[in-house]
Length: 123
Image (tube, rainbow, N blue to C red; front, top):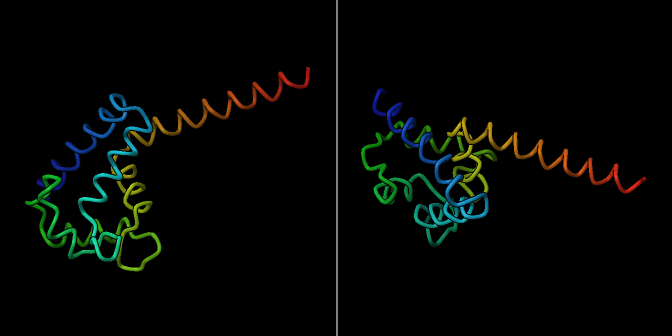
């Protein structure tokens, strides 16, 4: 279990750093690239089998079977047994609490900006 926590901590440290370095659009592009590496090319989704086969590409070769299954279950929002690109990206954000906090900050800033612009247009 400690191995999973270490992997999770490393991931949590990397994703916000990538977001800061690449910006929002660049981060999404990298997440899409990660999805492409893990997905079953014929089905266009990440399956448990494609995750098993391709996990080493992302440095996850030491993950145990139960960890892979758990990752799939956590990300599979529609419970169809596979991860779509959107489910994968959501999962990656959910695994990074620091990035989620920053996302809420960015959302609040954007909403405040919109409110300010709308309020100014009436005067």
